[in-house]
Image (cartoon, rainbow, N blue to C red; front, side, top):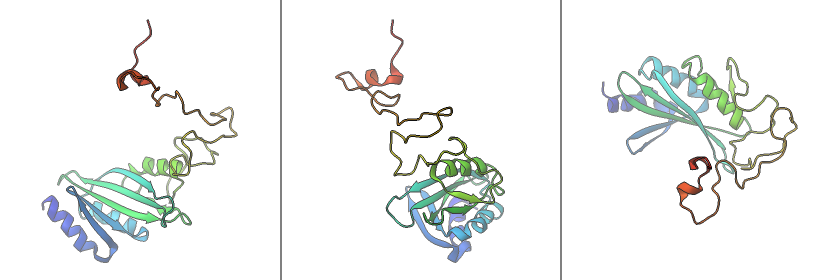
Length: 191
């Protein structure tokens, strides 16, 4: 079976579990319902040989309902074909079933999504923060989170005030110099 045949059969075999299909620049995306995630994921692994979970990411559509999208990037090593599964999650019920027992790599991806966006994964074996400290009350990748951060009450753990935007490690300094010369990471040592 070729890659295009596999993607066509996926849409036919899953039938009404597929809410929509998008083809863009040679990439195929299937939109699925949240309640069908585990069934579709298991089918993709067992029957269609999507044996590698490349990534899980989220999109915050702040101001829309449902607010979040969870995107699974799958790859078949044997057929060299890529597919994307996408589902929508509401802000009122930001929970998704885990797929970490289907693809082990999902465990870290799901922890990162929980930590940065606040979506919880049901039955995850170790759902705790991975980048921020336990007890941090915010989710830094949500759209309403300010660029400079928010004050925290953990003075022994991290910053306690919002960070200044001017002159930070990823902010260029205003001048007439070239972009390369203004970029803080591109500067050589001062002699």
